[in-house]
Amino acid sequence: MIEVIKPGLLTTIQDQGRWGYQCYGVGISGALDSFALAAANRLVGNAEGAAGLEITLQGPTLKFHRETILALAGADLGPKLNGNPISHWTCHWAPEGSILSFSGRKSGVRAYLAVSGGIDVPLVMGSRSTYLMGRFGGMEGRPLRTADRLPIPKPKANHRESIGRELPAEYRPPYGRNPEIRVIRGPFEEFFSDRGITAFYSTEYSITPQSDRMGYRLEGEPVSRKKSEELITCGLAQGTIQVPPNGQPIVLLADRQTIGGYPIIATAAHVDLPLIAQCAPGEKLRFRPVLPEEAQDAYRSLWSGLRSFLKD
Amino acid sequence: MTQAPRILPAGDQAILLELGAEIDPAINRRVHAWVRRAGHQKIPGIGELIPSYCSVLIYYDPFLLSFSQAAQWVQSLLADEAVGDEVPFVLKEVPVLYGGEFGPDLQFVAQHNTISPEEVIRLHTSQTYLVYVVGFSPGFSAMGVVPPEIQAPRLANPRTKVPAGSVGIGGKQTGIYAVESPGGWQLIGRTPLLLFDLEKDPPSFFQAGDHCRFYAITEREFWDWGKK
Image (cartoon, rainbow over all chains, first blue to last red; front, side):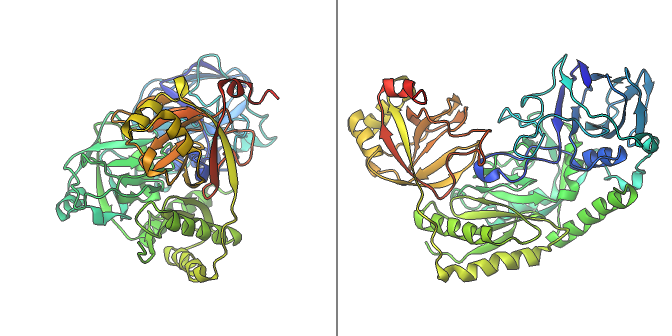
């Protein structure tokens, strides 16, 4: 069991998402940086889909009432195990009674904690992810609170063999401030003026403080419309970039609604979603159009790298 | 009204199939017929299908299918359209306590159309609606077409909290909020039915393509609902 001594700013249980229920209006939730969670899981010998913690900006203090192995990936929020700084993207041993704490943010926004066997909360519709809007999944559908107790299984007999495993930097996404994000044009580019489209691809957009797991609200040159008609509400893919009447784009992420009706200028490539998830308000995004095939090649290459370096 | 279908990339792992560009029962039925045909096939790499008013979002796995392969499959199911496997007619009945504190906008809908609240209730319960789409929030079902005499615009300032079970009118559509959520439709009543239930699979009472008929119940019936 893991005891929550301090919950941190926004710490939720997430896995790779609740797929299969969007046709009933149930969002997918899941880790915003799904690559980092998958990597942390693989480092401790878990399946990519095991549940871990998504830790936002300011980390929690956790006490392990059972021996385990753990790994952190994604943002570097200054993790310390029993007071000693520990490296990122690396598997560590946590003896019974260990305390994991965080000294402060160094880079990124969201750190992912995986422990041997995953966090064993009940499955809801096939997933352990916290669905904040629906108030279910994870820990009662809410962020962690002080004194929460998170069930974890007994580690595998050979778990200590994983200690010290590390995912080298060349296998990780090229995280950084102000990244360039590859996007696929449309599917509703015809709603926008030439000027609006040019602005979208040639200028930077700042991430506003009104950005969360539902979506990142951006601010910059307005992406102006050509057609004034309304778009008829349609399904929203991961990374959809919709533009409300004020011309300021919104990148829709894991906690988005299942359907929506603002015109869609472009859709972020999955391979670059981790880069977005690790950007904080005030940082900027640039967009570059690519074909779906190019985005898929890059996606396969990133994930195949992880899977070949850290085999099942 | 009959625009040629469009098959568009929605990012690198989904395709949007657009069968029209308006809210129209005939186009919406084609959406449900396509989803039904697609659901009968188990194609490795094809993921969730999310039907909406006049389009379907189709997820696929880029490790198993390229964009053109997925697009070809979407297209191939259009070619079968003439075969006309109709979607079965599923009718679900929904009891509603109209007006009062549960239908705070019933008066407005009546006044807006210069008819009585009783007439609004009579017209709202007088026909069968097609459930166009389930979404926005868990289990929210949007249906139409609402008779012209009781259509009403959405609220200029949406409510931040609409209770679960609220029945509303938004333009030419009527619908039910299955869980508490923000919302901008005119609320005319509430149903005691549980329309989103985590214990059930599927969790939603309505599925897109179902039909719905409302009937009025008394306050006593509302409170006693489910006790029997």
